[in-house]
Length: 175
Image (cartoon, rainbow, N blue to C red):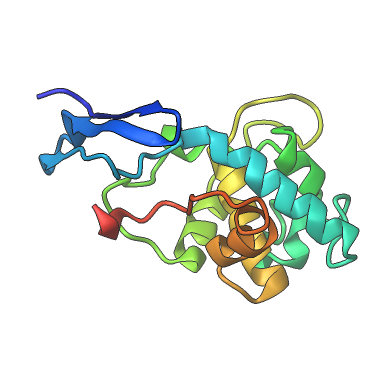
């Protein structure tokens, strides 16, 4: 009945013990194993930010571009929000964990953008700071729209693959 942990004990080049304890998912009672993939939570934001920076270096976007260039659903409310403001949590876009998103429901990217765009800003862009998961969700959609490729594939090709990281984006279906 406890959240899971996976451990490995290695001596030299040999694995002495590899085992999971507890549950990888409490709700569905999925046991943890030695190969459980755990959610990293907000640690993923650094990879999103890096991917945006790499796309900027390639000239595919500029961090001072208005986000409505790629997220036209926000026309009007988001006209003065830049990519940089999403990256730095200074956009005023409210945090979805504090609003109307049902975390148990599967949404399309377009639905998520429309839901985010329907919410009033917490403050005028650039005038304050407030942590926003929604801002990084929007950056993931923006990466998809800029590249024409799924956000997870872009991260894999730009970052995880070259760094030989065994990681991926979250998929609730894999539980």
